[in-house]
Image 1 (cartoon, rainbow, N blue to C red):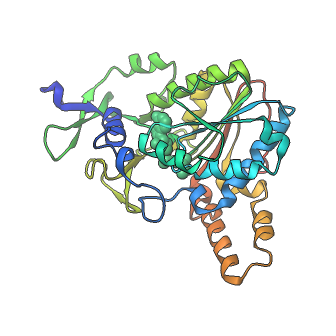
Image 2: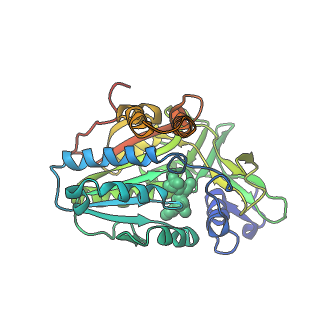
Image 3: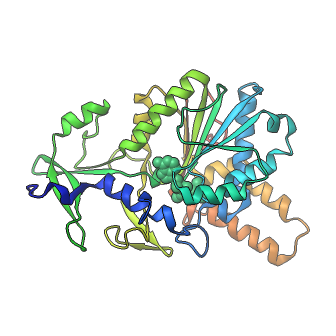
Length: 351
Ligand SMILES: C[S@@+](CC[C@H](N)C(=O)[O-])C[C@H]1O[C@@H](n2cnc3c(N)ncnc32)[C@H](O)[C@@H]1O
C-alpha cells in the first residue's frame, strides 16, 4: 500500500508506545492496572511465595559471586512494587546479604512510580531513569513481565517482499496497513538475522537497546539479568500481539489507553540478541520448573503448617496458579543471561 498521508500513519511500535505511555491517554499513565480489580494479576500479586523464591535465587547468585560487599539489585518495571517489597522485607532475615544490597527500580510510568514510592517508603530504594546510571558493583537486573510490555514492530512477507505493519490513525476506527520495507537494511542495523526461515517477524527495538545498555553494565561490573515472562521457545516467529482488558482479550486497535498491550517473548530471539550484545544465556526453563527446583513446594508446606484448612487451601490454590501446566506454569519461562564469565545454573537444571 502507498503512503499518501504521512502524518496519519505511525509505525506499530510508536502506536504501542503512545497507547501505553502517552502522559494523557496512555494506559500506564492513568489506569489502575494491577490486581483483582485491574486488568491482570501478575505472579508477585498472586502469592508471596513467588517473591520469596526469587529472593532465594538472588541470594544463591550473590553467594556464587563470593558474597561481594556491594551488589546492585535492579527491578525493571516494578508495577505496584509488590515483588521488590517482599524481596526487601525477607532479605532482612539474611543480614550479611541485606547489608550488601543496593535496591534500585527502573520504571517508566509516573503513576506506577508514585505507587511504588508510597509502598516502599520505609525501605532504602532508589529510582533510576537510565539503566547504566548505577554505582560500580556487581549488578543483577530482574524483570517480571517487563519485556512483554515493551513496544514491538511486526514485519510480514507477502509474495517474497517484506512489509512493515503501520497503524492508520486518520479515523476513529484504527486499522493496520502494510508499508514496504528494505528488511536487509533493517536487520543489518542490528546485526541480527531476523528473516531466516520466517514469513512473519516480531522484533522490539526497545528490547535490543535495553540489552545493549545492560551489556555495558554487566561487562564492566559483572552480573546478570533474570527474565520471567510469558513466551515460547521456537525459532519460528508467531503473531502474538494482544491486548487485555478486565482479564479478557480485546482488540489492541480499540480501547486505546484502556487496555494493556503485550506480546509473547520469543526466547530464541532474545538469546540471539543477548549473544549479539556480548552476553550469554546461562539457563532457560519454565516457571514451573524454576520455582519447583528452588523449593516452592517445601516452602508452601512450611508456611501453611498449623494454619486453618481455609488458609492452607488459599496458599495452595495460589501456588497452583503459579506452577500448574495449564495456568502460568508452562506458558511463563525464566531465563538467566549474564556476562560471559559467569556460570550459574541454579534453578535451571533437570529440565
Ligand atoms: C506488566 S507490568 C509488570 C509489573 C511487575 N513487574 C509485576 O510483575 O507485577 C510492566 C511494568 O514495566 C514498566 N515498563 C514498561 N516499559 C518500560 C520501560 N521502557 N522502561 C521502564 N519501565 C517500563 C511498566 O510501567 C510496568 O511497571
